[in-house]
Image 1 (tube, rainbow, N blue to C red):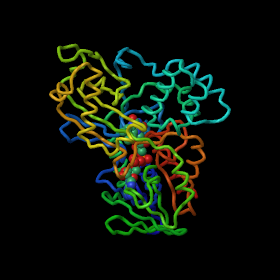
Image 2: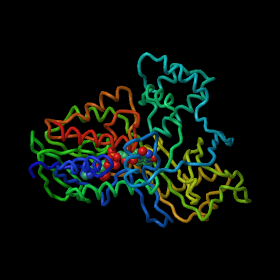
Image 3: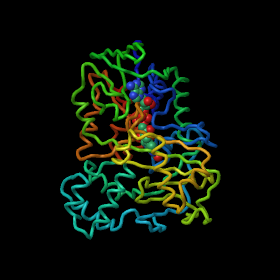
Image 4: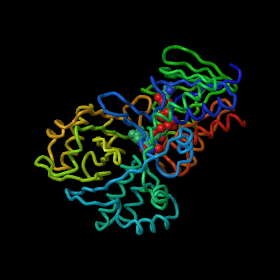
Length: 432
Ligand SMILES: Cc1cc2nc3c(=O)[nH]c(=O)nc-3n(C[C@H](O)[C@H](O)[C@H](O)COP(=O)(O)OP(=O)(O)OC[C@H]3O[C@@H](n4cnc5c(N)ncnc54)[C@H](O)[C@@H]3O)c2cc1C
């Protein structure tokens, strides 16, 4: 392989970089551990569900130009979520889109902050009195539930920027699923002469300037002058010899230290398809119906739920994120299902037994337990920009790094972040 680039990981970052490079005439070989492309984008069609369902990424957050570019190329668009947002806190239900009370007061204080602080420290320093206990709880719940962040490490400046930028805007679904976009990228890579090897987990990367030797778990060896590593932050953070650990020899201590200091949150996604949308109206079995339910935010153990509106399909998605999801990473799926059903039953004023009778399909996706993700997506810690830049720094024009975890900008933790990092890495490879 003379001018080939080995790309490790066929998620959004790896595939976007692979397509860019292949279309620019570079030879690319993509090595992917899973039996499918897409990584943390995973649209599945089995498990008894009636239609394609998103196990990972699902929404478009913001303008997302590269993601929209992929949709445009496919002649597809996006459709907005519709319906009513509910909140249930301490058993009281209300229709409301305000996650946090006193946002102006919070923002004033955040804007006055001279230097960044971990969010938990900011809250106790500036809003530590009893009067602000609800606000502290709401902000923490938002950081954990939406950003999958640990408030004791999350950046206050990141929350400031998120809230100032209208962080709660509408989040449309891509038409035709995210998985479709990944399949199209993989097809384009192959059409441009690239190769994609599935079920090829990389165990070790040995390198010297201008030479890379990649060893797969099953003993194959791939050689090339350059490699692009797009594995998730969780893989970079994995302790030596623990599951998921990817050995790099000689080691890259500055890159590993940078990865360790970055934030990477956990998510457990619970997909429940029912026989019909029973939550829409009151019945002897459902005391607290939620007509037109779009999103539901609560203080229940499984706090966040949403429907597929405007698609009438009777699917409810449960969401647990942040430290609480991480603590449950080893919890058996049966137990997680029971916990999720108990939360949903409480919120709707029904029983888990009723919900079980209504279920037609279910699936729990515990992303922190997934050996090739070890988490869900990045969040911003204090000092993250510098650390992301360090992790993204190419080594001797030989090793390049991409993936949503190294992205720094307005789309942290998204598909757009991954695509942008893939585009940036391809640019560096093409313009040394
Ligand atoms: C539950 C959940 C919900 C999300 N919701 C949204 C959303 O609504 N909107 C949004 O924009 N984003 C969302 N995201 C984030 C988005 O999915 C990710 O940011 C993006 O898909 C990451 O792409 P990536 O290419 O950087 O990483 P990945 O998709 O993880 O790709 C990396 C690839 O590397 C492979 N790999 C790992 N280890 C090895 C190895 N040793 N050898 C070979 N291959 C390896 C992995 O299998 C994977 O395919 C969500 C993520 C999750 C988990």
